Length: 306
Image 1 (cartoon, rainbow, N blue to C red):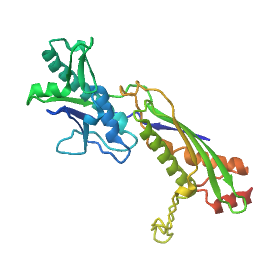
Image 2 (tube, helix red, strand yellow):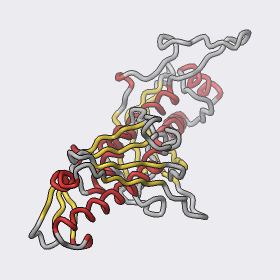
Image 3 (spheres, rainbow, N blue to C red):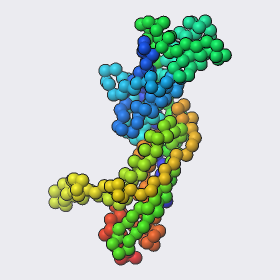
Image 4 (cartoon, one colour):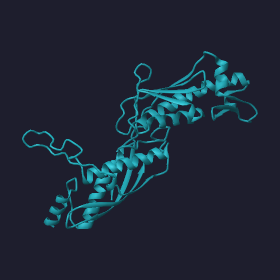
């Protein structure tokens, strides 16, 4: 078993623009990037939720330096917790302007209107307008909101937390370690997209498995050059090495961190995997191994030392 913490509350500077087009499609613009972690989907969900729009109507434009506002770097499990709140502020501003326009058309006050499924409805349900009907009436008048990530609270550490448990089998004759099961529970505040969160957990755990058992950079002592500079000699886990993975996110929303309620969940799952496996091996053998990866020769050497 091993636990971890990760500074994942995000923070400024991060900016975003949300624009409602004449055809009622919605553009979310941000200078961040999607490295394959699903940032586009997350930001689209935040915008759709804040606007009361249909997710299919939202398009996310990232990293276009001609059109998108600054959003900081795409690293450190920061995007959801940094850019997400900026998108929410921008979407809320755009929604307010949309409701002002709809209020004039429906002859009612903004506070008497709600939005859902890209439709504006009076609270009594008697009258409604779709977003498309409002934008058509506005013609060339664009509805747009701009938002920024607010400062972090003082004297509060904004952390994501995780704990993992490993079950292993060790062949004491060959030194081979086989991981049978890995169980992980992580707290990253509000989980906006459970499927993406599960993918992040499993991907991080597999990276940690590689660190624990396989990955080792070997250097030539004379030249300093790597001698295992290909995937033939630099070993990483294959599907045959993947154990049963049970990954869970602790339910909750961290509104202290930001008003989206989410903290970062990308790199944190990598951290406790290797020490959890090493602790399980130590428990099985009765000896500690203090160097990674846990290659067969290191396991046999630890057994020899007793």
